[in-house]
Image 1 (spheres, rainbow, N blue to C red):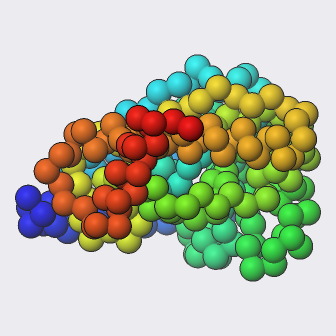
Image 2: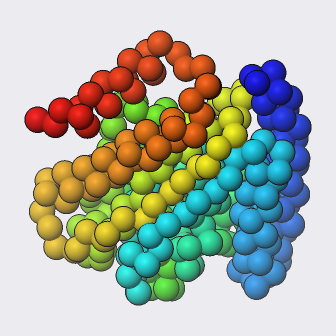
Length: 269
C-alpha cells in the first residue's frame, strides 16, 4: 500500500505545484496592473477547488468541512489548527472574503507575494517578534474595514497530529485589538497529508468550524477556551481518522500518543 501511495503522491505534487505556480503568476501579473479584480478572486477560488479535486482523484484524499453555520455575519477572526497545506484551501471557500495572515517570507516571493497581497493577505515578520505586532494590527484593522474575515493559524506553523500545542500570543493580541468574535477550527488533515510528507495517505480529511468565542474576554480566559476547543475537537477528528485507515503503519512514538489519548478518553480525570 505504501508503494502505491508513494507513486500516487509523486504524481500529485508536480501537478499541484505546477498549477499553483501558474495561478500565482496570472494573479500576480493582474495584481501589478489592476490590483484586486473579479478575475483574480475567481482564479483563487478555482485554485482551491481544483486542488481538492486533484488531491482526491490522484491520492484518494476526500474533503469534509462542517460547521460553517457557526461563522457569524460581519467581522470575525477564524483561528484554525494547522497540520497541512490542505488547511489553506479547504476552508477558503467558507470564509467569505478572507484575509489570511502569512509570514513575510512568502510575501516576498515574486508573483506569489503580489497575488497574496491583492487577495487581502496580511504580512507578519515573525523574526521581529513583538515588534511585528503593530504593523500586523494596522493591516488587520484595514482588512476588517474592507469587509474581510481574518484567518490565522495560532501556532504559526504546521504541526504534526498530536504534537504539543504551542499557541502564540499574536492571536490573543489580535482578539483584544479587533474586539470581534473568534471562530475556532479543528481538523485532522495531518493524518493524511503531513508536513514535508513523502506519502499522502487516502481517507477523509476533515475541518470543523466550532462555536464562536465571544469578544471581550480576558486574554488568559480567551486563550484557554480557544486551545481547549481546537485541541479537544482535533483529537476527536484524529481518532475518527484512525478508524478509516486501520492498516496504515505508524511510528511507535505516534502510536504511543494515540494509546494515551484513547486511554484519557476512556478514563477522564
